Length: 103
Length: 256
Image (cartoon, rainbow over all chains, first blue to last red; front, top):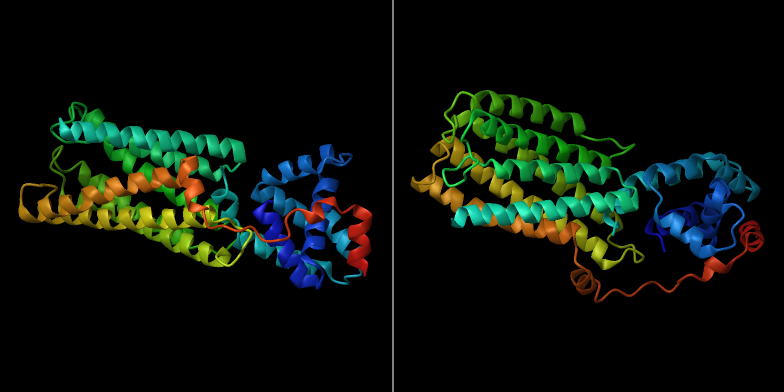
């Protein structure tokens, strides 16, 4: 599993009080919705492979994009902006992982 | 003969590491790794023209000496950019302090390199090593802080955490060897024949060899070495269970 997905899922779980696995699923769905060629796929391995190649900017786009905020709003979170800010901070703090995991 | 052989080994290891970094950068789409590759390529070019009597390309012409001279600050600048783009995007960063120190140090060093004779540097040309010390110090600080942030995260495999430690280790070697090179150039005029210069050369040479080897292990990381680093790693239990959850299930659980 992608380290960044795991870490951001954990951060999202802390902010929302939901299970980590569910939060990772939410992020994965947001990625699928934001990437055109993944929107129709049911091949989870293909999604996982895409996530492994995501750069810092790709993650930032997902976090800042409207899809994640909309899903958070659908969950009943009144201020998804705070959660998005928290996720951006986590991404910035852990950004070196994207380089250190390269193989 | 021995020195030339050592330069050749240094050169090959640096080039292998640099090429591997280019491959990693392309494969993982991490553009910041090109800066680290650029640093190693610059160091490798500098090695070809190292101005020592044994090296046939070392200081035989002003052009060769110029290439050697300019390769050092180019490598340091690439190193600064690697650190910034690996650890400090969208974060508060001391970048401009390091760039300022680099510019001042390089300006002094390059100016005084042209004032001395080839192979007999002006003492103030030693400032080129001061930049290496500073840049490596920043790398140690950044890698350590980043490692502290993820050291308790069980999803991050041991070989990844080890890579942070290896970056720290080779940077420490470069700090000490840089300081020794500074002392040799500043106090002993770059000579190895007097006691201080000889002692500093004896200190810096093994450290530079160690740094090259650790850098190779960190970035080329042969499969067997990675496996050995990961020998005690136990992945957390969550596995891929949530992979099978449908959108409907995830949204239902999120609302509950």
